[in-house]
Amino acid sequence: MISTRRSRGFAAAAAGGFALAMTLAACTPPPSDEGGGGGEGGGELAEGCEDYQQFADIAGGEGEVSVYSTIDGEEGESQEASYVDFEECTGIDIAYEASDEFEAQLPVRIQAGSPPDLAMIPQPGLLARIVRDNEGAVAPAAPEVEEMVDEFFSEDWKEYGTVDGTFYGSPLGANAKSFVWYSPSAFEAAGYEIPETWDDLIALSDQIVADGRMPWCAGIASGDATGWPATDFLEDVVLRTAGPEVYDQWIAHEIPFDDPQIVAALDAAGEILKNPEYVNAGLGGVESIATTEWDQAGFPILPAEGEEFGECWMHRAANFYGSNWVNAPNAGDGVDIAEDGDVFAFYLPGSDDSKPVLGAGEFTVAFNDDPLTTAVHAYLASDVWANDKAAVSTGWVSANSGLDPEGLSSPIDRLSHEILSGEEYTFRFDASDLMPGAVGSGSFWTEMVNWIAADKSSEQVLADIEASWPSD
Image (cartoon, rainbow, N blue to C red; front, side, top):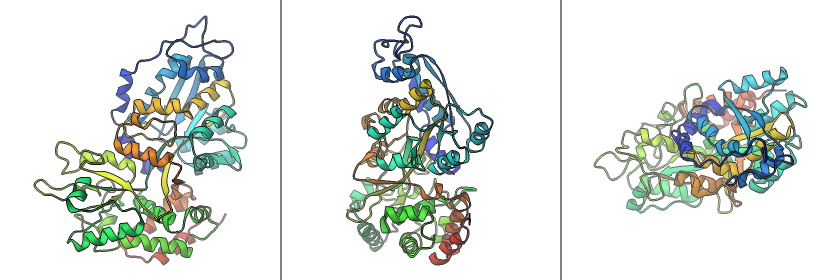
């Protein structure tokens, strides 16, 4: 589940960002008597609050809106900090609560008749389950919310917030996984160029081998969630070899898990991950991938003191991997993450005309149609909130096209936003998060470990996962 295997890296990237909230110039609160909370009965907001007028008009007054989420810790604090100007300008208090028991507790609250006003659901599969298991509990997104999503998000993103033809969930934060981390300075010194196609990527890997070096490093160890980075790798390759339509059929089990197209994709992934000439630079043989911690696997890219190059040249990982570099043994006084820095990332290429991007993110849903709830929901779907959030965060990204990339904290965040919001890219959500739990966070993880550690064949691995797919 996203809350256990991805948010650790993603949340760590936000460390310290919430403190920036103290430097925001909050707009003047509206008077409580005349010109209060906006809306038909409130009039215009105070000077400096113009961006929030549209939400005050929806709300029609002041009050409290409860929001329940998985986003906690320092990232949760930056989440709360992002609401400061909205709250002071509109008089609407956002009562934010986060819990690592979210997935278990939200259904309990719904069944008890006391759901939050809004919930930030970490994956479309859970959203669909909540809607279908609790008929009528989740409110369809209000027109004001849908207008925001239509303006600022792609159809791909909107579709992931839609269940059985009804739109419920507006996209919130996001991450992009289709990245390969590398050292720009090392590439320049060695004369290597960023590959533009999958064939170029393999040709570059072969060139690095021919130069007496080992191109790739990888790791899929993650405690109880060991194996998830390998599932991401396969998902990325399925998108590039079979295409988004087949990917969708695979997730929905309209084709078997071991369809020949998926076997071919796993074999293609194996050209890198199971090639002893390619991996596992600085870490061991192919089998060491299974025991190398995912958040440390890219560290050999950085050279040891006195060395020009690191032992590794490329490492496939999401944008949130950037938060890990500070912990690298060779980090020295710090690691510059930039196009011309110590490390950066390039888009994992496919064919000449295919630009799929694998990722994940959260979706906000409402449990009532109260105007106050709608106002906050519309705010969270807007460009206004996206820019408010960017101002108090580090390592946070959204696919919201109204987000000013200059407000993002780092070059990798800006590149992620460009890819996530770019019209030339086709977004697809992490497949394992959309599959039944017995598969997506069960057999898929464990069998990918077997594929690496026990050298199990692609055909057998996928057949065994197919056999575990629930019959109902």
